[in-house]
Image (tube, rainbow, N blue to C red):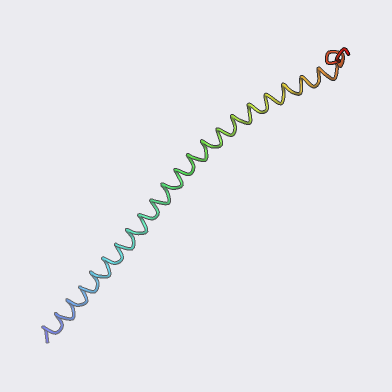
Length: 87
């Protein structure tokens, strides 16, 4: 009878070892996917910041051009004779 109990115990240990390996493999896959997601988010953040900085520079240039145009229109409105053509 001791032998039968030993086989049962060995089978139980084998099942436990197999389950442990499966759990470790699952945890490994989850960890890998979390790492990939983290890497993607870091890359996305860097790319987004770069694009936003570029857009901000373009907006600054456009704002300066708009201010210049506003001054020119204001000057033209105040002195229409500057732009009058002699016929």
